Amino acid sequence: MPVQVVGADQREEFRRLVREQLPRLYWTARTLVGDDAEDAVQDCMVKAFERFDQLNDLAAGAAWLRSILVNCCRDRLRAKARQPGEVEFEEAERFSLYRKIAYEDPFPYSDSLHLDFLQEFGREDVHAVLRRLPELYRIPLVLVYMDGFLAKETAAILQVPLGTVLARLHRGRKLFEKQMWDYAQENGLLKEASR
Image 1 (cartoon, rainbow, N blue to C red):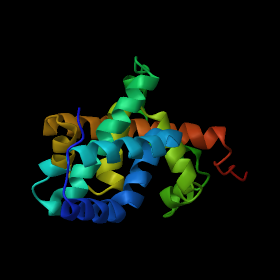
Image 2 (cartoon, rainbow, N blue to C red):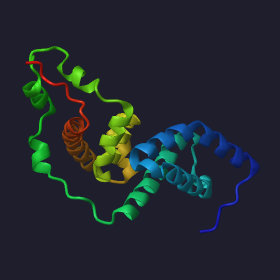
Image 3 (cartoon, helix red, strand yellow):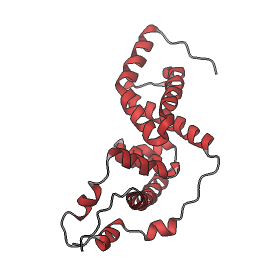
């Protein structure tokens, strides 16, 4: 595909948009593809520059760039794993983080039950847990809960029906809870009950 020739004004507008959005784009890419974040953002910038003349409203530039980035991340993830890993949904659906914590907590009536558990996780821990999730569920979770997009906007970015996004968010949250618990166990983040 030939690179679209843009004028000096358009190049400056593109630079300004990229400067404003780059930290957020990199953060999103890091969350979605981990170590491939820089390459994904670079792919995004190339594609966005090639198509910049198609952006009619600069106010929509952030969402437009995010949409391109998500597609670049998806391409990278597909290239890494042509076949998605199997996920045991029945086990995840039955899993309840609240019940698990309450059962394990020596003081189940504590008001800070969830807070005590969640305070053990740092930003890198959350990113590690997110990377364990299949992209099908990770991408909507990141867009809605970390980037602040509405489910309807996420559906438009991913080009899927709203109901599909809502279902993926529900399953993604359940899988995330299960993975949080497993990760906490594996990394010694669970407080031992004092008996």
